[in-house]
Image 1 (tube, rainbow, N blue to C red):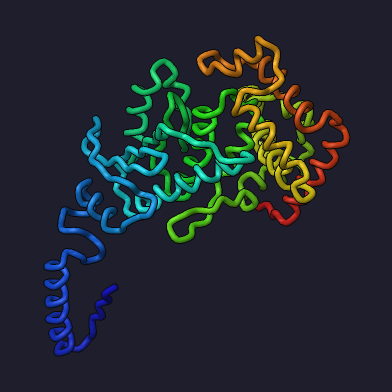
Image 2 (spheres, rainbow, N blue to C red; image 1 turned 180 degrees about the vertical axis):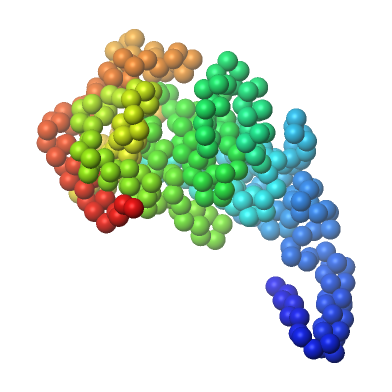
Amino acid sequence: MIEFVMLCTPVRRIYDMKKISVIWAICVICGCFSGVSLAGDINTPTGMAAYLKNKQLPTLKTIDLWESQFGTGLKLTTAHYEIYTNLLDPLMLSQVPGFVESAYRGYQSQLPKPIETSAPLTIYLFANRQQWEVFTTDFTGPQAQMYLKIRAGAYYVNGACVAYNIGRERTFSSLGHEGWHQFNSRLFKYRLPSWLDEGIAMQFEITEYDKGFFTFTPDRNGYRLGSLKQTLLKDKIIPLKTLITLNPGEVVTENDDAVAAFYSQAYALVRFLREDDYGKRLAKYQKLLFDGLNGQWPLAQEDMIIAADRNIPITVNWNHEIGKVLFEHYIDSDYEKIEKQYLIFCRKITYSVRLR
């Protein structure tokens, strides 16, 4: 790195300016000033492509130009993802490839053993909400109004995650969450009941960056922990036997407390199954997922059809029935006993949380 220091005295200032001119000329000749190639300005797609190539990111396989209705953007290809974007933020774009590949490894870690994938997963990342709304209107068709109600975040539909820049941390949080929905919808033979699908997705909302890769830290998810703490303090806990049968649509129509309770408790339930008592239920949890991946759940024929066919809309009744059947078969049917242990776990992980 080159640092320039401007001194106050006229003589020294002239002298330093001459040095700066010489150094600048050398950098221009070498094409390496601040890591930007001579291929173009970093605020242009070609310049950004040159900048990313120059960084030699370990997870970025190729960089191509992408022509869209919003003009020229970039297509970033990693081992498992194709990312289409017109965002030109150097920090975010240099970290996105490492983030999605770290997420992919995290999704795989939910299973007892990794699975092989062939076709890449697709992500659209737009520079602003206006572009996101225009794309969403075309991409989701008759369902557009539902997705346009999302105030800030991302969604998964039609095989792709669609996001826009809402700041680095929040954008990555949204991609981590929706990326799980994409991963299991693409690769699992059976769709997951809502508590499990949403509960796992929330494990990928908080990260730590380390040398080009990310570690997911669900125990530091202050938003979910805060909601869980409030739910406990307000005595609004949803009974476990009810929680595993609900879907988000049922609680959204009630009130904010019900929404907060569903999401925070689903987040805590997945952590409970993975972490409580030194992970004594982890094998059962992974077996539940692995059998869903391979289409081996003990379901009635009509429930099996709905579980396997993503074109059939999921019904409230199906979610109610499947949530209960799977939990009792794979985890426990003694609700009174396991709920006591679950609530102890909830209080333990929220003990140090301080609400404002």
